[in-house]
Image 1 (cartoon, rainbow, N blue to C red):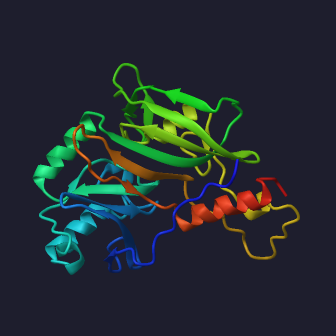
Image 2 (cartoon, one colour):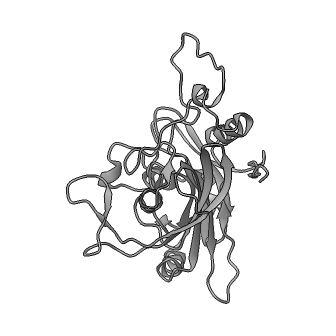
Length: 278
């Protein structure tokens, strides 16, 4: 199977910028993926929370930063015609990808109803190892919050239903790229469902033994030198690549998010060295 091609972010892509200490010590620019009269979408980096939650305590919060800038009447946000900030779905702080907000209460209700009616389709791409030979897997185990820990668990008694369809995309030696598709977005859903089906996502340590990848692990004859080696991509190797809205009788644009540069570099390195150990 040939290499997968992910679209590059066009140079003219608009950004929403944040000053220092809003989303970390440094200033941050988030690509604007979609601007519709009723909603917009940005490309969220891994490591930043999309809302305040005790699972994400201590992490920068995009929703809080956006609300501050709306109150500050930031020109970039005024130009989008935002009346308020209304989150449509949750995206794990540890993951990157499409994050969508409604601009008005009317559109919040419309999109929340679509989400609750399973009329939104979420597709993730992730890198994993597995001992399984199947190329399509399915998981519908219900998820509940752990009573003591900051994690989710499988519970047929108190868990909420959710379904995830997994499809193999391509092989990089001992690593594989997979797609996960769902119409629900529960906290940690894709990560936990993947682990339950024997897919160990690279960088995932909460639900599986997903190692981070170093160049010395995949390049034969690699010499590290004196400096401490850093992972090629120092995040969980999973990204929400697209969100589509499927409301019957309406044609509403969805949003697609290019892979983070580090994730894309990791795939290129794996392709070059065929995922072999040194």
